[in-house]
Image (tube, rainbow, N blue to C red; front, side):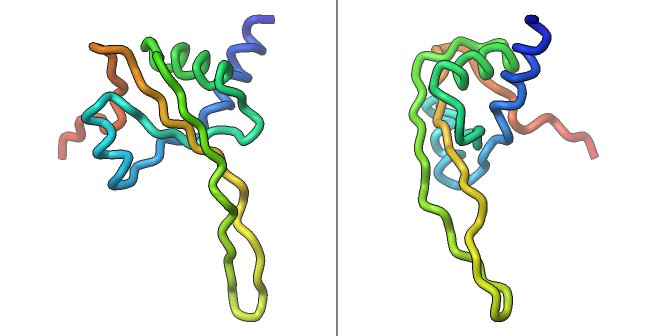
Length: 102
């Protein structure tokens, strides 16, 4: 039962969002992720704490409007996304950029 619960939590977090604004927020210990649109704040908190072994003290979520996309004469909408800004406790961090040795 717990294995299925752990897999479901892993599917909540899709990817980290790396933008200029999100990179500036790293200074104040805030991380931005794209999450499943059906996920609630307790699900997001549990997934972050389990995946990265950190303590979450706050979560803000937002559902930005869908963007229009046009290819030639065909137009449509992009997929709906949900963003979560996660604030971590003092002393905790998530390593988004692994050290690359070239």
